[in-house]
Length: 455
Figure 1: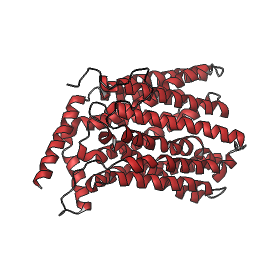
Figure 2 (figure 1 turned 90 degrees about the vertical axis):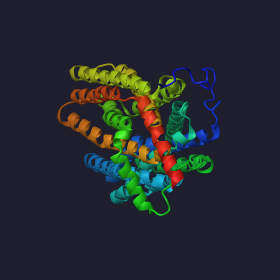
Figure 3 (figure 1 turned 45 degrees about the vertical axis):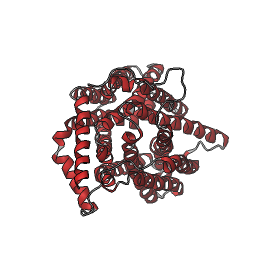
Figure 4 (figure 1 turned 120 degrees about the vertical axis):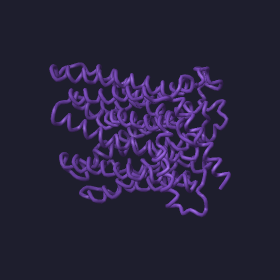
């Protein structure tokens, strides 16, 4: 049974130092700084600026630009789906998770800054730069998550996961403020002048990942015998995971549930601003709306760190799925009202936006910590690679399904589908046995240690 008594080092509400009483505050801080660093790619490149710049400046035709951008982003995500489990297993076999993490980060930061050279009409250059940059960013997210069991303990894994998630949202908030100041002070609000922001994103990534480069240590790994080549060892490791999937039944069950509700999360990330625009939000209101989502998401991640280890990761996931269901139902209701009365008050959307932000901040850290609990130490990069693969596949399927429903049927129907993602996901999470999943991971670790001792 999971312990239900409070974690003794959980900070009080008056304590503003999230690292206090952690046995290893410096590595946790360095790990969280990578979360803060890569927010420059998440926010400025994926969400806010580069999609608009690509459509309106590089391509110069909104309709054609949207089509090319969608295909480009989808192609990069499909590459990530293919590479995630393979590179995860390879990193475990070679015992080089840190090298993979730092290499992807350095390369991504360079390519991100290089996007500034993609000027008007240089569509091919933009595609050639963006696809590998996004692939490297997404793979880096997998490797970063694989460090979670190494920088935490079974009793504080939820708290540590939430700290990293919170630091990521702090990074997003700072970037939003810096971006707004640059637009006003330097007069670069017009998309045609946005190239400096891409350089900012690359430099931000590079500078803030430095603590991870210096402080983080390679997690312990069970290496393959010297007589087996790396390629064969990687293949055998992946084959063993597939063949012995029944041993990791709870992990597999959670991945299925994660795929379903992940389609909803990814859809909201991709379409929140578009839906807001449909409801009459102007550019300044959109920036403020994203700012609101960032603040509430950061608050949710911080709050989650205070109770997740007490009640368990599964219970935390279920709580936030409840928040998601309520928020998506709210969006559905607003859409129905708006279809009848275009003068539906905007404040309703702002209220629902707080629920979306809260759901974003909580579900991510809870899901990551549950995967960490189900992961054997010697398979961390592989399991988190599978987790990343499922999440990216959810983006491809969920966003495509939602967008086609919205385009060819109606927005209310698409939002009803969105609600369904979270409802079905919650039902599937109910089938997950957290205690059994933890025990399976511990058994696998003991078996791997015995084999290593013999070999």
